[in-house]
Image (tube, rainbow, N blue to C red; front, side):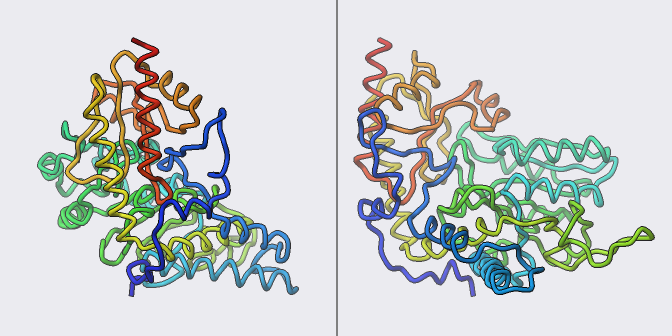
Length: 415
């Protein structure tokens, strides 16, 4: 049973939840902080900070190899975190959960291990124009080495993957399709199950970038039937420097190690080396033990939230944003996807995005400006970048109101 889907709804009170996040209780430039850069990284609840602090204060040790009590406690907590993640995404087995530094490393692992083994001249990797650079560049690198070709999947004017064009690109030369479940730049929710089914019909594998999806809805890798799934802890109220690669067992078993070193070996000799079993053959060196423990605590925290109520609230914030945006001349939302999470990407006539970001910061409002690591997508819309406001469980309508007060002030300054 999917642990995420079975989460017990405990509470959902955005204003009350703010008290769980110490960083939000501060002023920036003399104003109460309004944090609207959640697509870049979410803030951390006290329970996550305490879990990391507790590990370093009481259990700090390396895992798996120590012959003492600290090592035993650290190993138990570290592997319990893997089990927690496994349940969170409904993995059949915990050994299919590979610890990485984040989504970027997870995708690079698949590209360098699975890609080097399975791609060759004449093969194609389909990558949507919606993708973060982390789901584009690794495929370009491995295709340059193997003779395969990266082929972009077009995006419509609304900011959706062009499914008609996608199906026209599919043939038996396609070995892999790489798409995000949710766009970090536009908030587009992609019809990934349809994409996966179509890819599998021509024998292609599918890499899903779930970095933006994990805080918005329950993830079930078995129901999705993807071949690989990646996400980062820091987008899920967890620490930076920890992430997850999930893969189908038969694929991971067949893939060679990504890096060499300790932990990933079975026997090492100068006449030849054999490798460890899953998941350890992909986890060379000392792992981010505190990060894994912190991520498990973040998932526990997330499990206390009524996810359905959170989703309704997020859509309310987005609609409130659109209503206020309609009253500002020269403000243009980029992309109007069929389905979107709480991400609002926009430009304001006469006000450079970078200047608007700085003016908002002077009023205590944190947003993201620039190309959002999606330069091909920005080029598709003829832009160098946008301003992006992205919402999370602790944001309120007052935060949205403050954002638009700041936009109006900036617009007056540039009038």
